[in-house]
Image (cartoon, rainbow, N blue to C red; front, side, top):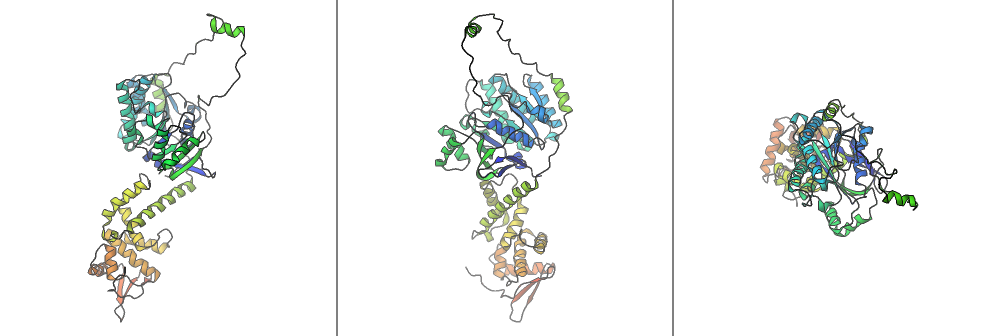
Length: 490
């Protein structure tokens, strides 16, 4: 199922969509200095995808608890034992409940230990409960730091291990990591390297600008453009976003965080009363200390998770699904045409070309759903026949379907003959047929025709000059007469 998440608009005012299904397989990295709009971006992503996929947010500042009232997320306070957190995480996966794991109020060392216990609980769930889940980690540099800092080595080790599991091995367990960081230089490289999608926001330091430009495939002289980005503006790249760097302005959100942008307000007038409030002890105007509400009992949270309804599916945007599919097919066709343009390609089997095809797919950022060998062989056969399957008629589609009944190495030969017959072109020579098969022996071409004729796929005839005509009775096609022993030119 193709689901296009509306992130915002590009410079031309056109919508920019994120392929949610592709994101689940390829992960996302968001980078931007404080105030660049990272939290706003994450909130937009969470709101737009809330009805499509289960979500878990690791929230170090309690900024996303507002999602609970609007979208039904369960807020989990992190002030619990490791065993309690892991049991809660297991229930989350079992009942497919969306949650906010609130780490507010804990020191850095305790935040890292609690987040590690939560991630490990999600990661270690039983195989039967490996449902797709977005795992959003805000301020990821706190949980996967590149250096030690002031935290204990043990806390750093267990937190970094949990984050590495999320980004490196989480995909097979249905966990899709979305990590946001203020600085790429502060984030552990083995965690950042596993993301295939990027949203880069405003950045000022040279080292971070250079690394962001490198991840987006931009030239070094373009790196300084990250300084000029406005709040809420990012540059997107990745198989779930765009094949080329694309500026995007993040759209509006429906919920608000606790920590909004600071606003100026007038100062109180200086007076003797104000002086007394500051220096006098025990005054009546001294405000009472703010006390946080006690955390919800673990049993209460477990009962809530058990009764949480599954997310209601949201209708899929058919136009977005078609656009994603069309762009992907165009890129795959371009890669196959590049492969067959090599002079030695006809003499290499499909299995040998397939490894090159996979490399090109990674370079072109096709994503995780690379066609398998059988699908590649079919595409290769169609490309060698020289017909665009998308623009051909129903009869050609039937011929393509009939070709799949033949051995893989013969499908290209069959389609080459079918194309010539469909267009009324001269019959390919024995040498041309052998080349399409991957052989330099013309006798192999004659053998191929005999093989397909004996099985009723085509019929061969010769005129009085010895020229060959190939007919396809099932479609009413036939080639023009041509010398079967003609030598290919070039």
